[in-house]
Image: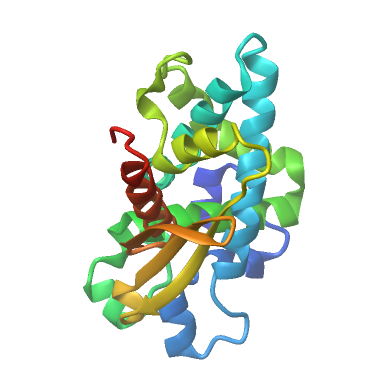
Length: 228
């Protein structure tokens, strides 16, 4: 744990927070850990991450319109990006996984690494505050943003593209609803519907909720006649 703290550049006052952030649901279930898994921390970390990135690109790219800012944020908070951030400090080596998940190579699974990155971020936020979390995130986000062309639309994701189309009609609202979850902890499969108001306009599946949402948005875009 101390080795990971050195890599993070931060020493936790409450070590239990870091342990929880590293605890996958498969480990928590097998060990009957009273603290639970990192899923709640992941939920918080997702919001903290989005705020940090939004604030940074808003203050840094002063002349860009909202659409470009949205696409830039999407590029650096997606599962692929977070997985790469996690690999930079070898987060997978410190994850606490159930035996089945470990045998299945869960410590290299992109969705697990991305979720764990968010959970660790939330733990740092709760333990050290916003500035500590911000410094951690920007170490990885700033170099990636420098590789992106702010006016290039090629890195927008399907959810962002769908949102941009729908927001042209302010009375319309988009929501994503998990309709199914199956499989063991080491190989979960999620089913998601994307709804325009109350109407289902796309369905998707994936090994994480985020992946399933992206798949559903892609289906919706195709139905709308968009090239994806």
